[in-house]
Image (cartoon, rainbow, N blue to C red; front, side, top):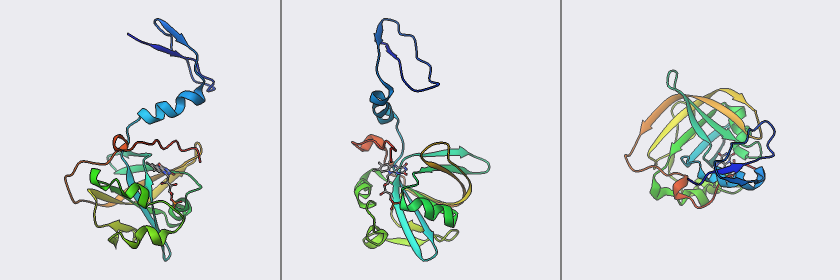
Length: 184
Ligand SMILES: Cc1cc2nc3c(=O)[nH]c(=O)nc-3n(C[C@H](O)[C@H](O)[C@H](O)COP(=O)(O)O)c2cc1C
């Protein structure tokens, strides 16, 4: 078996002992490769604050509790959505179908109006966040807590309303050639 001994420069991280191959690789070189091997869903997060709406692609998402139903999203403070979620205390998370990969390019850029111009959506019943008419499922969430352990803010949202609209296969990082590194 080919085992690699990775000696890193990451403080506090233990290096593994290799069986037969000893290689020294700096953390910063292997980190993008490792991140690229983590499989995540690719979602659209939407939010609204006062009269403004916005949406972004997000992949750092996790379920954190079944009862009560809690999900976590990690948002970089540079994102325009970040402060909107912080101020409004709500977001909606959409699970996308594999044939919605075009939305990855669509939900980019500084103009929220442009993001929603060609997308059909309704106002969420519980939060008022935009709910995409086309998606596999969505959850409307109320922020219960936020933590900033690193360069992203972890927003823990309690699911207030959820619907399943299709049983298509879900879009994930396996369908995406890039890697979201979360650097900035
Ligand atoms: C596949 C993919 C995954 C992403 N995941 C995240 C994420 O988990 N957290 C985050 O803050 N940004 C993530 N981004 C970056 C944001 O989607 C991007 O910066 C977006 O333009 C932010 O929109 P806003 O500034 O209008 O809020 C991701 C981008 C892509 C393409």
